[in-house]
Length: 94
Image (cartoon, rainbow, N blue to C red; front, side, top):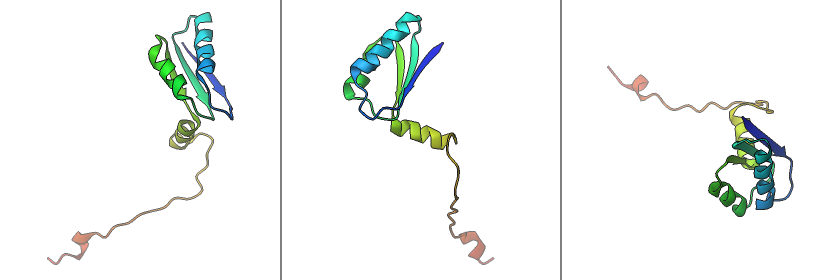
């Protein structure tokens, strides 16, 4: 079982915020979690999850936006661009 916490934050998510999420996992005996923010995570928060036994994945706003683009979630394609190159075989004489 994986627990998810998603928040729309304007400030940087700090270590105590991530530590509180890790503690809430303990309450349900979960070992895996995903914490998503529209903001960023502090370096201390990232270091904290790398040192603990539980597996917590941190997804910041930039990564979230990239996932949205990669998997077409919450986005609409407006236009597409085609890039062409010259086919040199077409111009070779036989």
